[in-house]
Image (cartoon, rainbow, N blue to C red; front, side, top):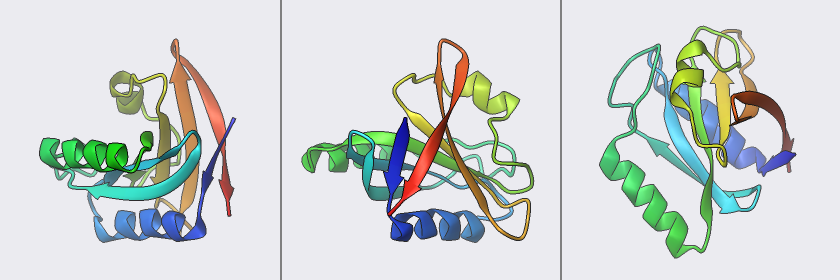
Length: 132
């Protein structure tokens, strides 16, 4: 399985992650099936470098906007300011939607590293990010 993301949206995700340092950034990507069309950066109301929570009003607005565009929320992304682009124990405990693709933006190294995963029945699958 793959997720298709434009270079512009990928760049926005990385920039937002950098802008939110030292805390984790978070947001949604919407689109049709696995083709991303829009990015919805959100406020991490936890203001933490180790975990995130969406602002419920922003989360609702993103879902409503996607629906109005006849799209769905296909991915949830968040950053790891100082750890690798892998699902943490906290991620595995909290990220439970089997239909969602989870994208991690690691800022641990000088060059950001972005990886995608899906979790179904506690089985983690790597998802290829196709940048167009």
